[in-house]
Length: 346
Image (tube, rainbow, N blue to C red; front, side):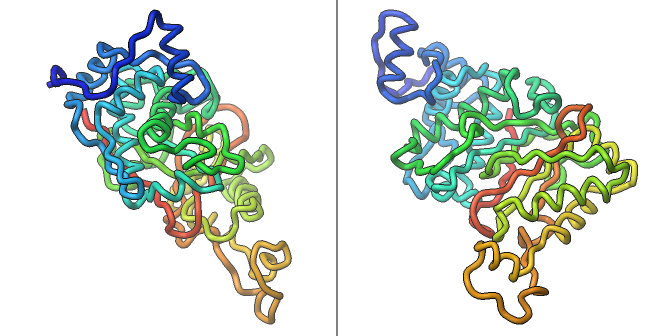
């Protein structure tokens, strides 16, 4: 299957260093050194996913760009992926190509969203995708290179380059790579992909256009309500308070055990946080987040962060020790870009 010809342009170079310098010169990197995408390496990637070079992985309608398996494989090599990582990269690319993810907004906005990738199912364990200590930090090849490959596809195939199509005012480090797995082994709750229509024994990827993680701390509370009250108070005044499409909550080990001890489900978490993160129209106007003068009734007229409790996604992940968890705002306004979950096909 992968003996079919590759159609990408060839370049002759003298050695690997010259190849990397060529990639810098052509603007194919994210600012870090890359692995030269030789034909042998690209074909190994394609073989791992049993795809032909011309197979279409996704179509970005806003850009009129067809993303082929060959282009994804090239960028996965550049990113430093192992061939066995490619099915996860492909699922993520399929996700950002879904109309519900709405590529044009998060791909070009001044708000600077990154592609948050949550991996669930057996493949997360097989590939050693980190779900624990230092969750958003360095040290795991799979996490770093899978997310990097997705961003390089956006850059090199879709044209999302800083200063041109990508107009992010600040951006954030997650635009290099933003990949986690859910800690399904220790979680007391159903995994994210099972809540979104997949079997627990399936492997799946959820992609969300997302801002950076906001960490919060609560070591005082021994109850679910206490921990989540702190979380909700922090979220309520986070700055992204005018109707985000979704939020993702990352509940780490100590908080996970405290909340589970009280018998709270993910649905309980969503409902509690939804109800306690609403702001009055009066508050939003006084803090210049909503236009207009404060009117009678504005003190009691409430606006939620998201449209419904189901727009709050909950993931159990992070280290076992430390009374820290995080929330991650989605990009845009209500319904502008939705998280999308795709099966990892192998």
